[in-house]
Length: 110
Ligand SMILES: [Zn+2]
Image (cartoon, rainbow, N blue to C red; front, side, top):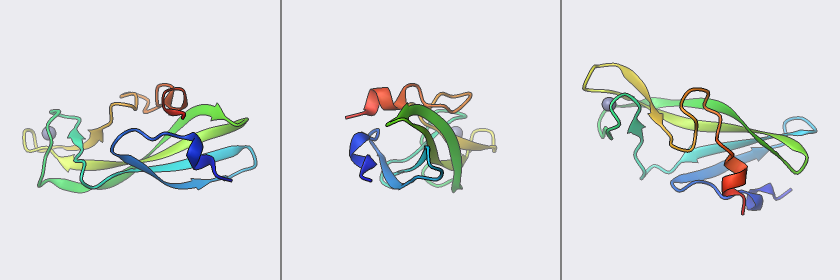
């Protein structure tokens, strides 16, 4: 199934894997390109040298093709030099609190 062509991924991100986990569910794995640096959610700056690995954020998308759609989005973590705390990068197309995309498919469907 070539579901990839139905999705237009936000700039700076790529679909790495599409899985049909259960019969009526699709999980899409999305990762940032390395050349695009993450934005610290603590201070909104880009930190070059304080990268501290990644974390997978699960989000539910709008249904597509009669299936439930889930996103596994890889977010990067940074140690913020301003207050010394760990922050997960901010992604503007994911809602801040629940990390559920705002009409991801609606906005990015080709
Ligand atoms: Zn910061």
